[in-house]
Image (tube, rainbow, N blue to C red; front, side, top):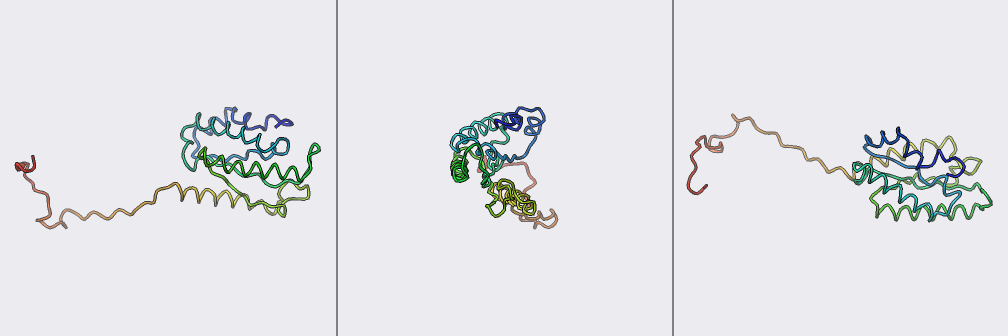
Length: 184
């Protein structure tokens, strides 16, 4: 982020608080590219995302498993900036989102799609209307419910073990420690 470098993902990942949190996190969700795509081409941002994911996977190996890292797709934005027309901006957003989905399959991370459309945007054509903010919370909850369901092995109920008194005498293990020649 050129205008606010302290908001860049690199700056955030370098902070001691974030490093400490990531070292203990069960999973992490990144909103990467949301601001960058307004300033840079989508394909250029993807290379940065690739470096970020690689760095996180190397520095926090416990997050290098299916379902541990998720990145959200970028919302639509129709607020022109620095001479970039809204059509060009949406093109870059679509390229970024498509490339991010491709990258997710090669780098072992999940995609979160909030399904936000221009209908959900506020009058500034950039931010979500407050009445739709619940979509974000519900999408995150549903995403992680689905991730947990996908990566967790199904648990099978363990049959109850009958008490020793319930096992018939002919089924009980022999008490003798003598082994037959066939068992040796």
